[in-house]
Amino acid sequence: MSVQVRDGGPDFDLHRLDDYLRQWLGGSGTTVVARTSGGMSNPTYFVTRGDWRAVLRKQPNNILMPSAHAIDREYRVLVALQGSAVPTPRPYRYCEDTEILGTPFYLMEWLEGRVVYDYGLPGFAREERAACYRSMCATLAGIHQLDYKAVGLGDFGRPGNYFARQLNRWSRLWAEYRRGDDDNPALDRMVRWLAERVPTSETLALCHGDFRMANVIFHPTEPRVIGVLDWELSTLGHPLVDLAFNSQAWRMAPDENGGLLGCTLAEMGIPTEAEYLDHYYELTCASERLTAFHQVFAMFRGAVGSAGVAARGDLGNSVLPDAANVGRRLAHAYATRGMALIANDP
Image (cartoon, rainbow, N blue to C red; front, top):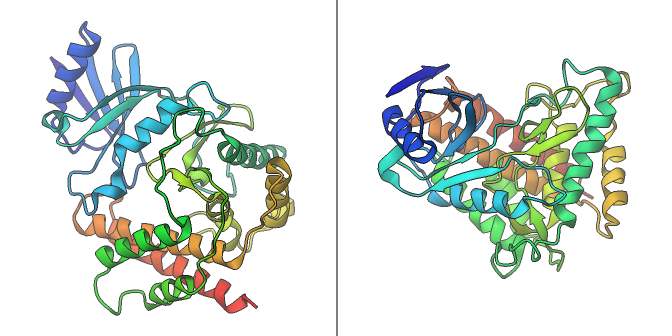
């Protein structure tokens, strides 16, 4: 038995993983584990054993709310999307036995490509950037146009008003994460504003739930998406929520999750928000358009998700060394941007 840790230790017994892989794959070799810089909600690791390699995703050891770490749903989506027009890593194996790593986990294909956390696409040639944005937009459109029933996801969402259900869920998460009544009052005002404006719509599609630059993999040398990651928040819902979350980039500053606000887009070769949205509408032949509600709701979810990062940081259960402070700063940034949208709503 031989194990090795690189770039930060795992939150599980590495020897148990080595035993699991040896029983499954056979042979011998050194199991090497390195924690990735992504996977802020569900810890993510690169795993190699000889010539074999994979990515491991698991639930965190200290779970604040089980529904926020739906590893089983994430794996189910990856299985369903194989062979579809939506590019995803190939899933290898799901394990619900908590005796092995302490939580459920799964293993999937390790795609070789470029993962970027900054919407400005640093390191990319100017002429590449527009193509990358077109590919990202087309990938999102492809997710929403997928025949989810045909791939076995007809029961992937709950009945009832999607917006009301999601507002209730994320409001409960915020109640769980907050530190007191004076913690981010702007976020509380957003909840009240949204609750008074819940729309009705029959539109339903597979939604990623967290579709942003950091959750796509670009080809190593070509300006195109080869994989979509982090499906833990996926469900059947309204596609404009995904689109609003994706288009937050144009309303957030570079130090707020790598946004584009204030950047010279034309010089960078990056489309404007209007151009990006028009491309999506053209690809999907969408009859509905983004409204202030969709955009504020996206900021609300971003704020609550960041508050969750802070809460996990308080528990010492995050890959970020300063997760508590970073999470709270971003939660306030999202809430501030959301309130700005509300102020501009006629």
